Image (cartoon, rainbow, N blue to C red; front, side, top):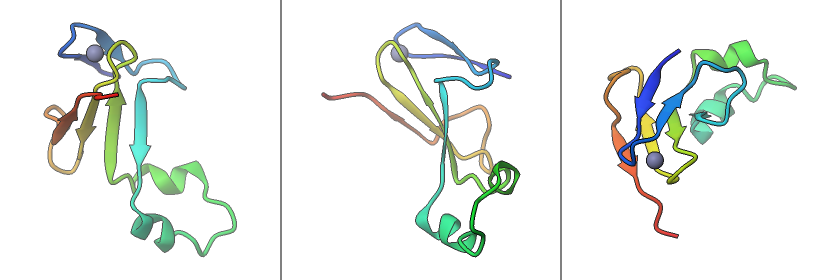
Length: 82
Ligand SMILES: [Zn+2]
């Protein structure tokens, strides 16, 4: 569980499960490597995440983390244009 203060000032928290804050992004290659299975169990994906994305519900900013690089500092921050 963690908090992240968005640049707009909103305090985001991923402590509820499930939540609308945190997303897991997988590359096509990662999913293809798992495609031998008919269904992909959640636990198979837990350690395969390529990116962890937090979306601010107030302003729509996206904070993209690569937890293999850093759990505290996002690789990229995207601000909603439209
Ligand atoms: Zn925000």
